[in-house]
Length: 309
Image (cartoon, rainbow, N blue to C red; front, side):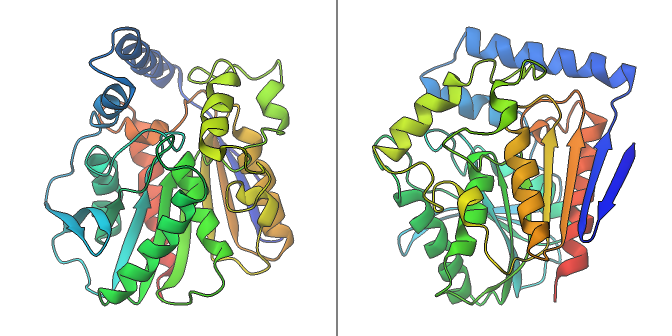
């Protein structure tokens, strides 16, 4: 493990053991097998993958479908009533559901000792930009109406982008955002990062940039990919809550994470960037198999725990 520090920016590289590299290859083989032999349509197959993350012991689950809000509360025993994690799921703005993501949200919630609301939001192509970021802002306001005074935003991939897009809403000040944790966030839908086309990057999930370029086009529906609500890299705010980003070292989205982290640090934000060599996009979901996935979520919980008011 190597650590480089510059003002409030800490980047740490995590090296995978030989034993865990073997586990990673098994995990990847299962992912590729699932998509080679799908269990239904694309959304159903994606949800099948996501539900492989087990729901943690000791949580209660409550479905919500009211006030224009749909999702699931995932509550560990003894969770405080005045704070919550807003979990925004990934899926390239076209896939994913709150129900499928209950497992990953619960793994964060139990470690943090804080209830998580894992939210559904409008998906493309039925609902194109800016429906998703508008929904994310509305979800923050809804949590405030439920008596929550402070939240942490957590999201993976497109959900990480949504979490950071919420910072562009300067009109909403409550509930306060205590911290943000993003797993492999998709922050530049223009796909200008060097890692997108670098011959040194061998992304085991997104082997071709077109695998993200197609969903980006469907989601944007002609909108500017550099609109900060779609691509938070182009609208890093002057004041940010503490930010933790975790990303795999072989991801085409690696430079999305690096560029945002550096820009946030340049504005004086507290930023922690963890780069995990040899691990795939949103590896945190593989808690059943990968010890590093469990350690990464432990680090998320510790980070959030340091920043509640």
